[in-house]
Length: 95
Image (tube, rainbow, N blue to C red; front, side, top):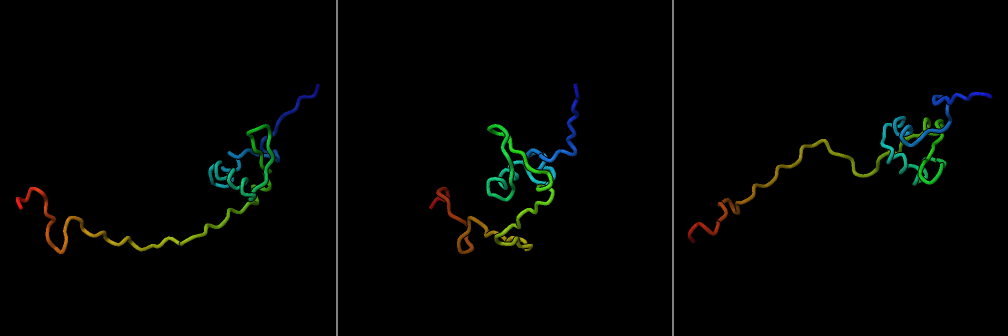
């Protein structure tokens, strides 16, 4: 009988967790790439996704779009409780 040794290093398919570690993202993000067609995978059973190691190695993360972050400090907030420079009246002022 021949005994087979499974070599994880040279395996052509990897799990979402392994792909995430290669890409520096979370497994959820890797599955998002799959759902949106950015990475291809094959399903084993109902839940397990396996990705091709070479495709993950050559994958470029999409560039973030949207408004760029500013390097300026946030504007100071207005002080609360004063209107027109006077302190706010309360019900206990006697007037």
